[in-house]
Image 1 (cartoon, rainbow, N blue to C red):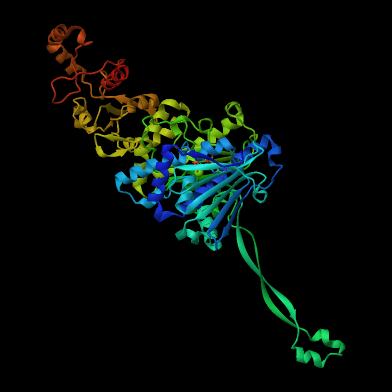
Image 2 (image 1 turned 180 degrees about the horizontal axis):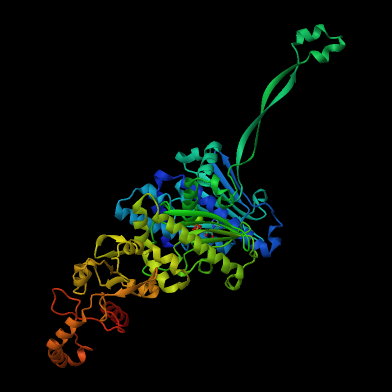
Length: 593
Ligand code: ADP
Ligand code: MG
């Protein structure tokens, strides 16, 4: 029927709207960023589909966003020629919460309350469509999907628990495709409907939208117009042929309204890296990934030759919270473009190994087909080469952080992503050489600040061949391990592996710069100080004691031996050469339970 049908919001939506309106009141202008970003998403979706279905563009070839203001009545309309919504999609998208941005917002809101953080921070999150109600009394969404031959209007009011949907019947309001939002501003917010204000907001918030955004602006041009001379004078010369020439001219300003391009549409990754500032990279990062913290590092590069692509990569300054597993496969961290057309943010797994899934960025390739699918990606030789290059660039970028003037930067990186790199030791043999220099551990000579393998090697004794480590559950227990005594006495540094994954990681590496990793808790530790004569004597003297102890302990131990590795403790339990270390045993137990 043609009459409007009424629907109730899902309970969460009502709650969310309350939250938004009550917590973002000091940051109302974010509404424009949210609505423009939705328009841009809708255009991205359409452009992507049109690659295989060019007919989709036939009703309206231009992909753009147009914002018109009516300052006298306090109305803003935002029109996009994107994918639009069907009737059902209106219900699903605008009546229920299914979406990322909003979920993230709820979480941030909760966390910021806990931490007493600035509520302005929240404004930097994607809060989505409902932010329209920050400034609007009433919102109309009139939308036409290419899947439907009808245009529908969703209508909602602030502080209401229901909305309506009806068919668009006013012929003057029909659009060929896309969505038109009409915001009827609250009395105190009508100022947003000023054309210059909207223009400034677009420039400020939507700098990186890759579709043209036009705003409706008043323009003027000057014009010379002829004016009649003083009528008295004119009368005098009535019969003079030269009358025409004596007519005077005057300059007037003609006013008119027209669309004005308001944003820069060149994507940042296509620009010359020399001309992009760090601030611009950081802004792009925050806007693209809905982040509120600056990234720790970024890298912008172009590769040429066999495979051509451009990319901007980032290391976030913080790991996503609230996830137990460190590698999340559905990160949406890498946005893949083909010839500037946004394809998907679902392909991170194809472009980066799992353990580097924390890297964020955009990748734009000229060599992939526009209708690329996961299957094609997985088989593609081009993608294999891209992946290799991306990984290499990611490591360069991380290495760059170790050289940052600010020493805290790498400490911060390590705290957030150290585990990922250790996982890389296990999963990516090919890149051991790149990962190893980035690892950090505590040691017997550096219990407060972690050291690198390079620092360890620097500090090795002249005759020391191996890199020594001990695995324990904490620095304190590593420090108190009897195995350490002899090495401490000899001033040999020992790495403390206190993270459960450390030992496995190091065992996978096997060596660093031709120096083997040696577990000091294993039975055959050779510190190069053997005195065979003396050992023989001691063995004779205590041989029987050992046999007696072995008899008493029976199967509980593999063997009882004389050792030269202790200096103050009378005895120590060591692992067999081929057995698990005590730490590993602890881990294996923990896993089988
Ligand atoms: P998000 O953008 O994070 O998905 P929003 O609350 O901003 O969350 O939007 C909710 C959903 O509404 C979008 O995912 C999209 O499906 C739909 N939507 C919003 N605006 C538009 C639009 N201009 N054109 C088409 N669909 C839209
Ligand atoms: Mg959105």
